[in-house]
Image (cartoon, rainbow, N blue to C red; front, side, top):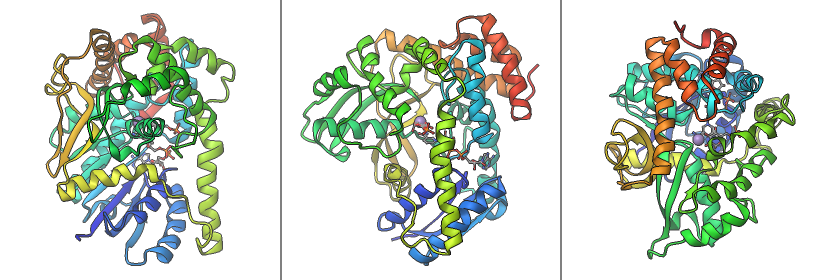
Length: 443
Ligand code: NAD
Ligand code: G6P
Ligand code: MN
């Protein structure tokens, strides 16, 4: 089988070790000749890179492993770039979550004003790595899951329309795993129909290969329990705040019971609930939870491996849930025609939605990229919510491209999460000052 050269951009990410372990676990399906880590933070990269170098020497010496902060070294001779960067790192995620609270609006990584602020930072970082990729390896594909994926995908559509970049989110995969447990199947046995935007969608069908439809059974379960399952199926979303999110899906379903909701809709359908909840501990948000747990755990663990000079008995955990990234790489590399929910330009997939909207729908992925499957006409309730949200995302990208304060103010004003133009303006001025040089100058 052909062997591939991969660079992970955001090599200092909390997810990098789990993804490297997952890649090692998938060598029979997606063999590597070269694996490189690239980050623009030398210290983070070195801490994880040193530990992973030891681990790879022990477990996969045949793979040429290296880490670097030099774009040319990172992006030369690569077939795939797996991208998970966070421009501004956890210090800025904390601000995304806490600045809006000062204005009576919840703060979240990808939704509402926090997501908008993060989007403005991410576009610059994404364009930078796309340009490196195209300069040093023009044939390379980028598999991107850097957030906020909706805004990033729209920015790529507008600003790098010809780039080989695939945008994907793990939430549809993660929730399908929960659904599969609810009905006693494996995720591979189930096929879905789904429509929406990233972090803003609904499942309309969940069938097995024989054509049996499970949506009623899952609906009955979710109406009682949300997506909370008996046995924990998803190693990524287990912290208390995530359990609460899975449970809340029950109330999302109640609003529009025909379809099964993406958990992220809680930020748009129940923003007051989210705010009240956050205001119980405004100084301690999800970023604090991650910094104290996942980030600390991963970096401490790396230091332990390096100090010991061996990963024997203390290897990182395999991030098995991330194997959909290998499915995606294989779909491109081996033309597998895998069916995957991805973020793509609509072009008629959702019949009553603009062609140029970046939507999340099932696609067949082959060596030319994804082909979206048509999802037909969607109901007016979902259509209206999506139209409002997609316009926010488009305005953010226009604000970025045109350095437009006015469009950014409109984006925040239009967000369902912000109560008025006045609050939007005060929030915008605060976000501008807190984001400093991470944002383009707006005037
Ligand atoms: P993290 O802060 O631990 O890691 C991000 C890394 O990116 C940092 O080491 C940082 O130095 C690096 N970075 C920032 N700007 C860069 C640039 N311009 N070039 C190169 N490297 C750069 O964050 P994390 O919690 O591990 O998450 C990483 C990313 O993955 C985030 O964007 C997160 O939202 C995303 N994510 C997406 C999904 C999804 O479903 N789409 C799932 C999980 C995580
Ligand atoms: C889900 C979403 C991602 C998001 C992540 C946050 O996986 O699909 O887009 O980045 O959750 O998880 P965290 O553990 O960092 O809060
Ligand atoms: Mn996501």
